[in-house]
Length: 486
Image 1 (spheres, rainbow, N blue to C red):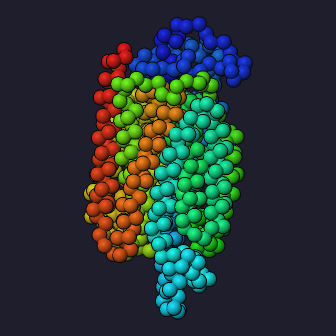
Image 2: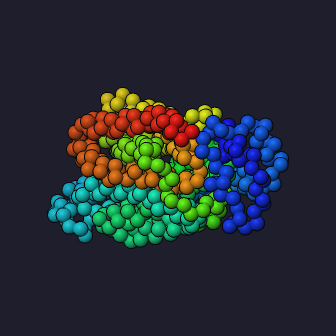
Image 3: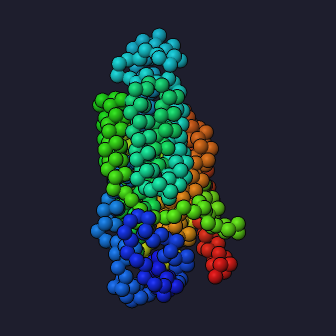
């Protein structure tokens, strides 16, 4: 069993019961650096009976499951903002396409207005320029990239000021970004509001919810993380359909304002409830020596995996809608299938992480499966059925990766400063997402022109292969680290 308690700790005197936050023992006092030194279940049970400290009695308790619920709400409203964005992207592209069609059929003179930022279009069409396809993809990549970038300050805030500070700040930023974007009718400004500012808010909000639940559990550490991550999949299934209906029935402004209101309410509730189990004293952000290559390997994995996932998230619905001869509804249905499958993948990954003592090979295996699926199913796909098969299988793989990542960081580095370490890992994906933006725009441009996108899809599969190679390095690096330090 993976636990925080080592034999050396058991032999020490009992920790006195904490009376205030400053007196609570830290993970520096009780954290386990090497899982092989964990005591047996009988030893752990005897320690539970003998110890009345705040450390032990709050593990695997009802309080921990309440923390999981608040983390669920944070994931529900934050990550669903990322995963439901293709609904907005489809709206931007479709309204631009509808505006052009109506202009041609109604009054050819309106074609000249397509080159004006404030062109006069029919009342049913949104006033976007002919570059809506490019800007729609750009907003999505900025949203994902800045969400990953925001994980780094979120981790530092969580370790030094607490989870509530990061969640409250993230809720405020995301709410302001969405509400301000509802008054904007220019895509460049939407890039700054919905993309950059909204992405930072997402990163600050979801990172504490990604790391705090496992602090409250010993036996169900991975399962608690998986339950919290279910909020992302369930939120995408529920809110993507809601936003789709609001966009096409009431317009962009109404959809963004409803999203801002939901973010304010659910984000504030999650911020109020989330809190770490112990106080972590101030320490250097990373306690790694120069020869420890485990963190760079994880960052390299996230670099390539983020590039591959960005293309899949932003381009898969458009591909299903355009190349396979489907409609806008078909593209949205593929997104629903991806989200539903990721829910199953999260639960499967949580079960495997709690049962398997060595979790780090799961990262490489998940990326290898995604690479094979991309190269063997998506690249040759010519109809809608293979795209649904790919969405289901890739969703299971992505959900398993999302669950395994914080558990791997926990077992490699311990829970002390875990939010900061995980923030470094997630932030490593930001440069890849921003660098892949031209490829994602090219993908959408080729689709709109009816040209093949197989080579760009293959690049996504190659990125997944590179991420898998970095993941398979982790077991060897861990063995090397154990020989050096023990």
